[in-house]
Length: 93
Image (tube, rainbow, N blue to C red):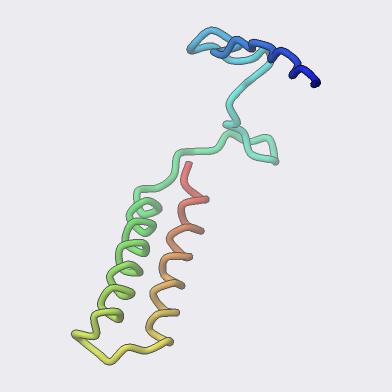
């Protein structure tokens, strides 16, 4: 009979100490044009959470059918609002 080869023991854990960055790493705070990016205006996260919340609420209300009859168009409207919230989230700095 053939014998199974011995498994190698691999030590796990961090490669770098906690709280450090690799050499040469700098966070991206400059746009592709070379200008410093200002922080996002307050309306960006407000719009993001509003679109996400309204989208979820629209889908739930459509599912329950308490306000209007269930409709694929209303479902798509809710999904569109959620997608708008996700797209808005990509613009947050």
